[in-house]
Amino acid sequence: MLVGADSVVKTEFKVISKMKINEIEMVGDNEFPYSLAEQHRIASNPMGMFDRNFMLNYLEEGHDRVLILTDDDRKIAAYAGFRSRINGKVWQSKNIATYDPYKGQQLAGKLYKYVKEKLNKSLQSDLEQTWAGRKLWTKTLPALGLQPMIFDTKTERIADPRVTDINVYPDDSSPDLHRYCWILERRDHYPEQNLVNESSLLMPFTGMWYNPK
Image 1 (tube, rainbow, N blue to C red):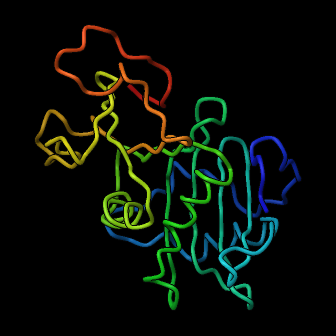
Image 2 (cartoon, rainbow, N blue to C red):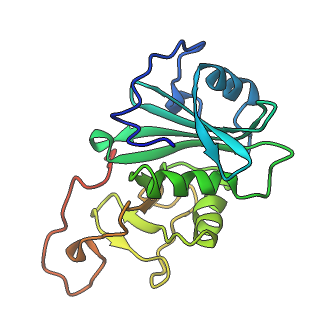
Image 3 (cartoon, rainbow, N blue to C red):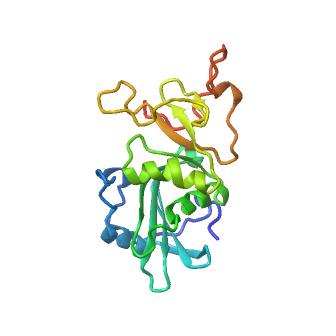
């Protein structure tokens, strides 16, 4: 089992290609290249069985973290890439992919759940997403029993999508473009004064989530 990934796993990796995850984000609906995922798999370390059917592989370099699921033939079933933020407390999602014939098994969502519940990391979406990323945060994760919240990078307040009409995905002409992202706190703890409340006079706690602005 992978435990305390930011502190325990310190194995040196022979990386075939520089892992600049923020420079290889998926464009449109393009799938994260299997060939690049395979390079990362070769450089990764197996960490034990996952979901009884897959091997969990882990790779880190600098602030980048990668989890890869492989089958008995070492073929990649799912890939999840993150950027470590806030001294490792928050993992910001960068790339996700599930490859045939394993699509439709919620593997990417299960990897996110593993990060939250087993690695004890809070999760945060990127400010730019593909349709696959949108489906992950709005459909897959809730189906797995998780409840993502909305983080407002302008005010640093947090909103529950079940009780708000905030549009997390405005069109390109909206002034709110790149304002909101999804978050999952590792303990599902959100300070009361950070929650959206029209009558609140208190300033929200800041610095709890990565804010590029």
